[in-house]
Length: 309
Image (tube, rainbow, N blue to C red; front, top):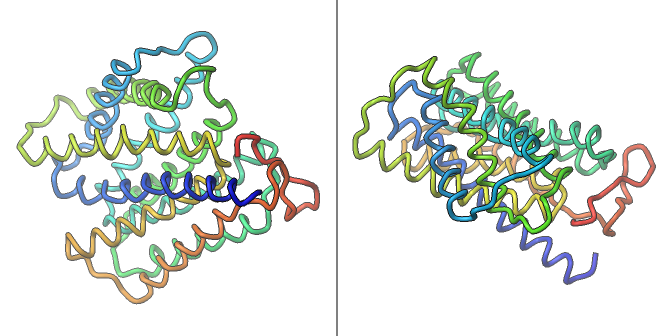
């Protein structure tokens, strides 16, 4: 990469990193402001209104093969991910629920090998292991009580997000369609999937108070429409396996918010774990030495790097 290219690459990553930082606030907002024990309804309120607003603003609808692709991406990135995210958030302390998302890079490396024919580099494989070590330090040895369903939901949500991130890069976007329209497609598709499930499983919507309205508005506008626009924009410009390592910032953000705003205690071991997770984030962002190939593949053959990196 040239100096200018590296600067652009770093700038894109820095802007995209705002997304997981904002996502880290989801857990505090969910537990403190929203009606309790309504993960499906909360996921619906986060996705569908934002998606419909973006559709109205962009006035672009998918057509042809993109109807199916938008549906698949909407299911993975929104329709499955959101309910699992909120289920974990309701059943686990914020820092623990957030740090489970740090496993997403490991899933993404596997999905990229299958879907993008990318051989994982040693550096990214090490970064993924470092991230898992950080997760282990926080989750397995932390003082917080763990809930099996919450843990499984968090891990499954990470896998869904990783698959959606890799597929988003594999398929790209239709010519002339920007990331804002793509965000609207996926939020709407995911929201439409969640709506009947929320009605059947959780029943009628709960009563809203001022705090709940504020929480839903924050999640819909800042935590979803804006955050996902930045996320999909980043995926279109740098490798998905680099972008997904930014998810490691979400547990760090969640833990800091939990500590400052909610008074949640952090042990020394948990703090070390967050530091390790942050190290994994940095390792996962180091760009390849040359666009188009990686000089550090595990198997010895050049690894494919998307041309839009």
